Length: 172
Image 1: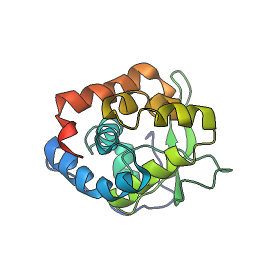
Image 2 (image 1 turned 30 degrees about the vertical axis):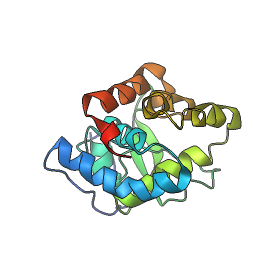
Image 3 (image 1 turned 120 degrees about the vertical axis):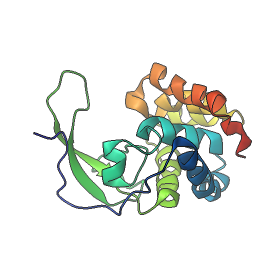
Image 4 (image 1 turned 60 degrees about the vertical axis):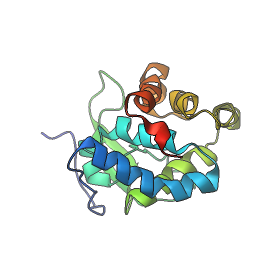
Protein backbone atom coordinates (compact mmCIF):
# COMPACT_ATOMS: atom_id res chain seq x y z
CA UNK A 1 0.00 0.00 0.00
CA UNK A 2 1.28 3.44 -0.91
CA UNK A 3 1.62 6.15 1.73
CA UNK A 4 -0.13 8.53 -0.67
CA UNK A 5 -3.51 8.56 -2.36
CA UNK A 6 -4.65 11.01 -4.98
CA UNK A 7 -8.38 11.79 -4.79
CA UNK A 8 -7.78 14.91 -6.90
CA UNK A 9 -4.97 16.07 -9.09
CA UNK A 10 -2.95 19.26 -8.63
CA UNK A 11 -1.14 21.10 -11.40
CA UNK A 12 2.03 19.27 -12.45
CA UNK A 13 4.96 20.27 -10.29
CA UNK A 14 8.12 21.81 -11.74
CA UNK A 15 10.61 18.95 -11.70
CA UNK A 16 14.19 20.26 -11.56
CA UNK A 17 17.15 18.63 -13.27
CA UNK A 18 19.30 19.32 -10.21
CA UNK A 19 19.20 21.17 -6.86
CA UNK A 20 20.68 24.38 -8.30
CA UNK A 21 17.95 24.57 -10.96
CA UNK A 22 15.32 24.26 -8.19
CA UNK A 23 17.02 26.98 -6.15
CA UNK A 24 17.21 29.37 -9.11
CA UNK A 25 13.56 28.78 -10.11
CA UNK A 26 12.39 29.19 -6.51
CA UNK A 27 14.34 32.45 -6.21
CA UNK A 28 12.76 33.97 -9.32
CA UNK A 29 9.31 32.68 -8.37
CA UNK A 30 9.47 33.77 -4.75
CA UNK A 31 10.94 37.25 -5.05
CA UNK A 32 7.72 39.16 -5.87
CA UNK A 33 5.96 37.63 -2.86
CA UNK A 34 8.77 37.98 -0.35
CA UNK A 35 9.17 41.60 -1.45
CA UNK A 36 5.45 42.21 -0.94
CA UNK A 37 5.39 40.64 2.53
CA UNK A 38 8.86 41.81 3.51
CA UNK A 39 10.08 38.29 4.30
CA UNK A 40 13.61 37.11 3.47
CA UNK A 41 13.83 35.41 0.08
CA UNK A 42 16.72 33.20 1.21
CA UNK A 43 14.51 31.81 4.01
CA UNK A 44 11.74 30.94 1.56
CA UNK A 45 14.22 29.20 -0.73
CA UNK A 46 15.83 27.27 2.13
CA UNK A 47 12.44 26.17 3.44
CA UNK A 48 11.37 25.02 -0.05
CA UNK A 49 14.61 23.09 -0.51
CA UNK A 50 14.47 21.50 2.92
CA UNK A 51 10.78 20.58 2.89
CA UNK A 52 10.78 19.18 -0.67
CA UNK A 53 14.29 17.74 -0.91
CA UNK A 54 15.09 20.26 -3.67
CA UNK A 55 11.90 19.48 -5.56
CA UNK A 56 12.16 15.70 -5.45
CA UNK A 57 9.80 14.67 -2.61
CA UNK A 58 6.60 12.72 -3.27
CA UNK A 59 4.36 15.28 -1.60
CA UNK A 60 5.86 18.10 -3.67
CA UNK A 61 5.39 16.13 -6.89
CA UNK A 62 1.74 15.51 -5.99
CA UNK A 63 0.87 19.03 -4.81
CA UNK A 64 3.25 21.36 -6.64
CA UNK A 65 3.86 23.01 -3.27
CA UNK A 66 7.37 22.51 -1.88
CA UNK A 67 6.34 23.52 1.66
CA UNK A 68 4.12 20.52 2.55
CA UNK A 69 1.38 22.84 3.84
CA UNK A 70 -1.37 20.97 5.68
CA UNK A 71 -4.14 23.54 5.97
CA UNK A 72 -6.63 23.12 8.82
CA UNK A 73 -10.21 23.26 7.54
CA UNK A 74 -11.12 26.30 9.68
CA UNK A 75 -8.28 28.46 8.30
CA UNK A 76 -9.08 30.97 5.56
CA UNK A 77 -5.41 31.37 4.60
CA UNK A 78 -3.39 30.37 2.82
CA UNK A 79 -5.95 30.52 0.06
CA UNK A 80 -5.39 27.23 -1.76
CA UNK A 81 -7.08 24.25 -3.30
CA UNK A 82 -6.83 21.21 -1.05
CA UNK A 83 -6.17 17.59 -1.85
CA UNK A 84 -6.13 14.87 0.74
CA UNK A 85 -3.07 12.67 0.82
CA UNK A 86 -2.46 9.72 3.05
CA UNK A 87 0.61 10.51 5.08
CA UNK A 88 2.25 9.98 8.45
CA UNK A 89 2.16 13.19 10.50
CA UNK A 90 3.77 11.85 13.66
CA UNK A 91 6.31 9.11 14.08
CA UNK A 92 4.70 5.83 15.13
CA UNK A 93 1.25 6.73 13.75
CA UNK A 94 -0.47 4.93 10.90
CA UNK A 95 -0.91 6.93 7.69
CA UNK A 96 -4.04 9.10 7.60
CA UNK A 97 -5.60 11.50 5.14
CA UNK A 98 -4.32 15.04 5.55
CA UNK A 99 -5.37 18.24 3.74
CA UNK A 100 -2.47 19.55 1.65
CA UNK A 101 -2.38 22.83 -0.26
CA UNK A 102 -1.90 22.59 -4.02
CA UNK A 103 0.11 25.20 -5.87
CA UNK A 104 -0.34 26.07 -9.53
CA UNK A 105 3.33 27.01 -9.84
CA UNK A 106 6.34 27.80 -7.70
CA UNK A 107 5.23 31.44 -7.80
CA UNK A 108 1.86 30.39 -6.39
CA UNK A 109 3.66 28.24 -3.79
CA UNK A 110 5.67 31.28 -2.69
CA UNK A 111 2.40 33.17 -2.17
CA UNK A 112 1.12 30.29 -0.02
CA UNK A 113 4.28 30.35 2.11
CA UNK A 114 3.95 34.08 2.71
CA UNK A 115 0.23 33.83 3.49
CA UNK A 116 0.86 30.94 5.88
CA UNK A 117 3.22 33.10 7.91
CA UNK A 118 1.35 36.40 7.61
CA UNK A 119 -2.01 34.93 8.66
CA UNK A 120 -0.67 32.41 11.16
CA UNK A 121 -3.26 32.35 13.97
CA UNK A 122 -0.83 32.35 16.89
CA UNK A 123 0.02 36.05 16.69
CA UNK A 124 2.65 35.83 19.43
CA UNK A 125 4.62 33.16 17.54
CA UNK A 126 4.19 34.99 14.22
CA UNK A 127 5.50 38.26 15.71
CA UNK A 128 8.40 36.37 17.28
CA UNK A 129 9.34 34.96 13.86
CA UNK A 130 8.86 38.28 12.06
CA UNK A 131 11.33 39.91 14.44
CA UNK A 132 14.00 38.04 12.42
CA UNK A 133 12.95 39.59 9.08
CA UNK A 134 16.34 41.24 8.62
CA UNK A 135 18.31 38.05 9.22
CA UNK A 136 17.39 35.35 6.70
CA UNK A 137 19.29 32.62 8.52
CA UNK A 138 17.56 33.31 11.85
CA UNK A 139 14.19 33.63 10.10
CA UNK A 140 14.65 30.26 8.38
CA UNK A 141 15.97 28.62 11.56
CA UNK A 142 12.91 29.78 13.47
CA UNK A 143 10.20 28.69 11.05
CA UNK A 144 9.28 26.05 13.63
CA UNK A 145 7.42 28.91 15.38
CA UNK A 146 4.80 28.79 12.63
CA UNK A 147 4.88 24.98 12.47
CA UNK A 148 7.13 24.30 9.50
CA UNK A 149 9.12 21.04 9.68
CA UNK A 150 6.75 19.51 12.22
CA UNK A 151 7.31 22.55 14.47
CA UNK A 152 10.69 21.10 15.45
CA UNK A 153 13.49 23.57 16.09
CA UNK A 154 16.22 21.07 15.17
CA UNK A 155 14.59 20.57 11.76
CA UNK A 156 14.21 24.26 10.94
CA UNK A 157 17.80 24.85 12.07
CA UNK A 158 18.70 22.85 8.97
CA UNK A 159 16.90 25.48 6.85
CA UNK A 160 19.24 28.08 8.31
CA UNK A 161 22.21 25.82 7.60
CA UNK A 162 21.07 25.49 3.96
CA UNK A 163 21.36 29.25 3.58
CA UNK A 164 25.08 29.02 4.33
CA UNK A 165 25.71 25.71 2.54
CA UNK A 166 24.02 26.83 -0.70
CA UNK A 167 25.00 30.51 -0.54
CA UNK A 168 21.33 31.55 -0.59
CA UNK A 169 22.07 35.05 0.69
CA UNK A 170 23.00 35.86 -2.90
CA UNK A 171 19.24 36.12 -3.46
CA UNK A 172 17.87 39.40 -2.10
